[in-house]
Each structure stands twice: as structure tokens, then as C-alpha cells.
Length: 160
Image (cartoon, rainbow, N blue to C red; front, side, top):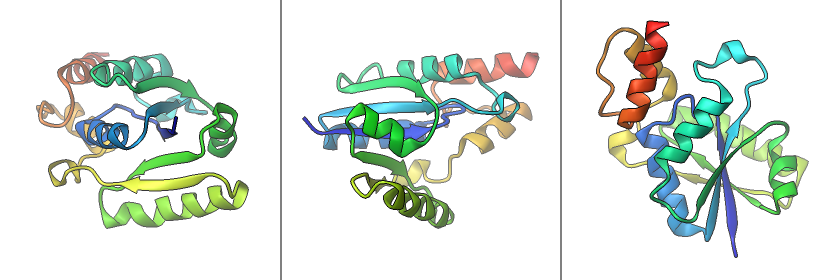
């Protein structure tokens, strides 16, 4: 059985993330969504438990996808899980330089770990969690970018 891991902060998970997850779930027998634990809790809007919960809700329709939190070095984490493929999403050309640098660093750290890049549908290519959080904080309706439960969670955070 071929496994892959899609690692990210998912703060919050967006339709762009879900699109990449659905694409990867058709390529691999099993896909592990690995939600990064922020080392600095002030950097994220949602805590790790909230992000894991939202990711689980977002992928409940996919029987071959699992979600769990992780911390530490990505290559060590996936190797410990017996996974040798990391999935990364590429939205725009601006993502490529950072993602390419990370993939090459991971390859240098462990030559047996491969990184594959998947692009979301063009209708989601401009969506970023950062942009969604900012738009929601300014009162924008983000229903076209995130599932309803994420929209509600964003609204709840704004009231605090």
C-alpha cells in the first residue's frame, strides 16, 4: 500500500487544501494529513486541536484519508510513519521558490523522501489561509473559500 503525507498548518483549512487532498487521495492508497503544531502559539489563529478537528471534518467523505497532529522535522516524522512521499500544494509561481527550497532541503536530509507538488483547481489557486483570515477579520463573507464550519469558527474567533 502506497502512503503519502500532506503536511501543513491548515490555519484554517480552505477549499484549496481540500482540493489538493482530494487529488492526492486519488493517487495514493492512503493519505495522512499532518497538521503542524505551531512552536509559537501566537502565530496561529486556531490551536492544534481546532485545526485537526476542522481537517477531520473537511475530509470525512474520503475513506482513505487520516488526520493527525505532528511536530518536529518533516522527514523524521514521515520516515517514522513509514511514508516516503510528501505532498505539497502549489498555488502560484510565488509558492514555487519556497516549496522547491524546502523539497531540496528535505531531499538532502533524507534522500529516500520524495516531494510531489499538486496544484489545486484554478478556481482555488489564489486562496491562502492568511488571506482568508484577514478577509474574515474585516467582515468579508468567506463562504466561497472555506467550508461552513470553518466560516463559523472564523466568525467565533473574531468575536473574542
